Image 1 (cartoon, one colour):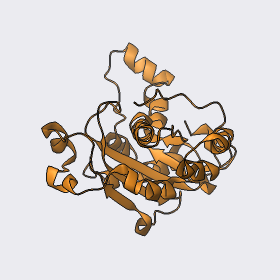
Image 2: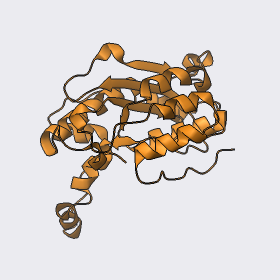
Image 3: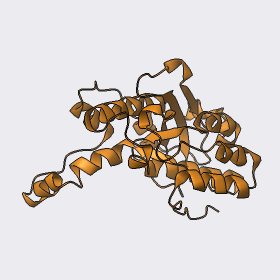
Length: 238
């Protein structure tokens, strides 16, 4: 049974150090021991990795991960040779709706590995880096639920959520509140709509590797336009 996910206490570095000393599984202990950048680390110096997953639905308690894409990067470059992509066999059957959404078919997952088989590789890419996602409740929620199911322990980690950064301006700012008061529709903060505002090209969505790349590029544009390379990571992470 998947346990309820608890919010990490203030201070991600301290949280990861604490978990490294208490976690039982060696794989998770290795991940937590790698830690994360200090809160005052400039985002321009932080090791980053864009992360995206495709799932059979939106509820981590009832749905499963079918693919994972990761793209290590920095503010200055995206070395695509380091990108990784995995198709996984979900523990529940694919539905027609999910196949239409992410285009991963029954034939593709029939002989695909379970997440447990590739988890060492996935965590090997993630450890020591700040994960960058577009809507953290999907990536962090599903990975935590999947790890709890397989290893019996939580996996919480800091993320920079590019959707949340867009929400600060387009949903939470005085300007956004004025738009609501005037009865105007909210500005979209979905991935492609957000990219369009920064002049980034449209990509075919709902492919974990392509969406991870799109998220990496979006963060680069957000920092260049609204923040700076000197912005502490603590002002961006969740």
